[in-house]
Image (cartoon, rainbow, N blue to C red; front, top):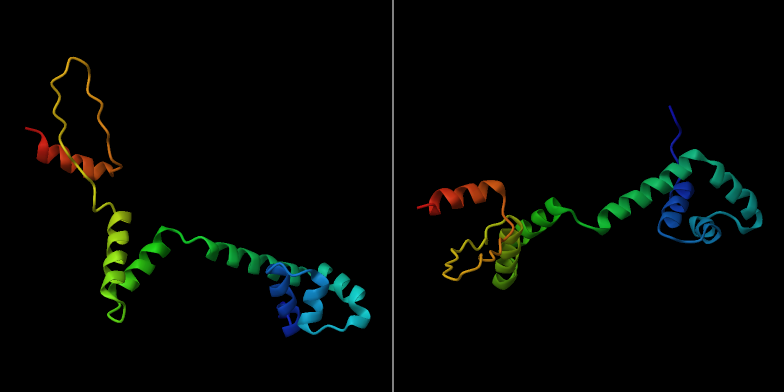
Length: 138
């Protein structure tokens, strides 16, 4: 079984992952300034510490940009929260509906000119197009 990182090693890893210079991170984590070069050498050579730095960097990077599911969960939480203002709840509902394709504008185009018409097609799922053509194909 691998030993866990101690508190100072964990703090050092977090500070470095957050962009702090290594020397400052070591001092902030509680290491002594008197043997900082030796301490940094040990920390750089410790695979567990380096793995922890990578883990913290990856974790913070994945939180910087929300994926579709995270945004939909956020909007759903706001929409269902009765303590939020009605305008915020409605806006969250609108964003959620747009993200899920609820506001697709399917309109017919009439053409009587001599050239071929130009049709602007909104983004839709194949299933939505299938339903549109079934319902509007006379």
